[in-house]
Image 1 (cartoon, rainbow, N blue to C red):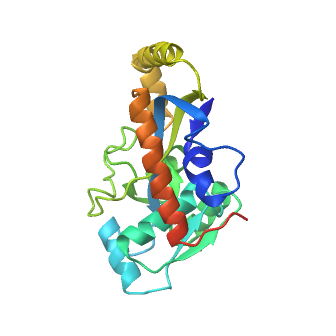
Image 2: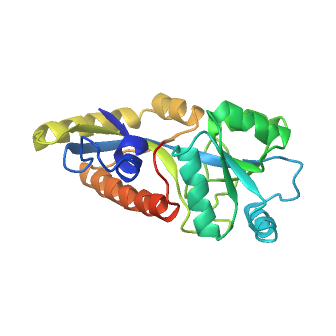
Image 3: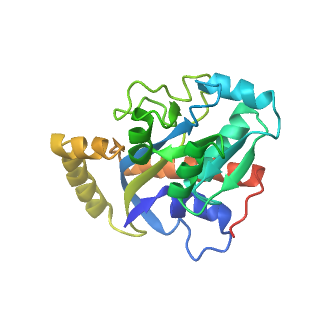
Length: 234
């Protein structure tokens, strides 16, 4: 299957009675792609960078708000992680989907949002949104002029909607190695990499062991965020 951050890393924290264990029941093969979010804000607000946003929020505790595509979504969790790392007191406003959240950001009903690159960048280029930072540790090829939040002073901040190939637990090492090698060949093809970048993702590729270690680190990270924010699945 194509496993992703939601059911593999976030699900165990939000849903304690899952019918599967993401580590025990699956065999990682390789990371395929990572989709970072981009922190965007209404351009009418007075901050133009991540440090300025944090300073603005700290000067108005509990008064600034951020949107998400819904409680427990990646956009919500990114906002909670940023809130924790930056040490700010802001209010979460959940919407029924990213389109509704984006509409109210543009209208000035909410201050900022961790949107997807494909949906956010056209609005940034049109001047309807202001880009403050991307959530990956390296700048996105799709938005090379936008700094990362990590380089803006928050080195521990990193979040992405990643995808990777996984098999059922117990699959032979020979099969996993064969599919891993074949997938890495495909991910190295220029046209495939170009298409992934065009869609706002970062082509990855990894060994099964690297992917397995990454999954465990993601489970630990998001479990801590969910616990600290006292989030529960609706």
